[in-house]
Length: 253
Image (cartoon, helix red, strand yellow):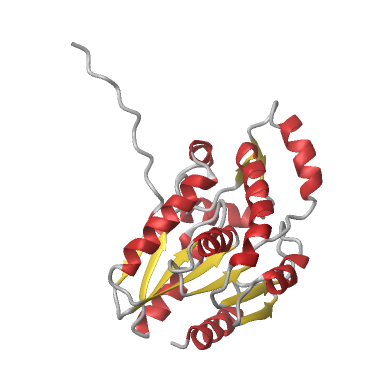
């Protein structure tokens, strides 16, 4: 009898691998952005761990492998993955916070709106409430996707090899982009139900995030404790130190 061929499992890039650094009873879950990688925020987790914080990072399904892999997953998969991680972290931590970058913040906001007991506080870094030119995208993507499955990201040639190595994708699956836009639209309505403390990191000149997102989020949260920290770029060394210091103050670590 012929053996059934199994589809080989796609390996996650070493730099995009999920992590767990066990510490004390305060836990922080790190969620990367859409088509991005944990590589960008792992250093912050290590610094918090040095302060005795338990830090967990999840690789959202379809990420850290190939852009084609993203076609197999939806925002529902990412929400489920995030919720499982929060439940797991809660098993050995008394307080659980989230650092969500871009779409990672949207996922956490959505879960906090549905179940306030899942998360004790949230730091949203460059999280969109509006996508630039989103109405144009909604119109064009259904047309363009008939001929193209992917759209290239604006990545300088000098950085493409680094992105490939650390699990950051160089193109967007158009089908997935449309779903993300629709998810962000729904998220705008949900944020009024969020009552936990939220620190909003306003990242200047993010390519796809409409700048009005940050003030909208601040104005519509139902949180008693909420702040906005404005930075130029969350990847610079001095800016990262500022974000780290402010995050520790906000989380009272």
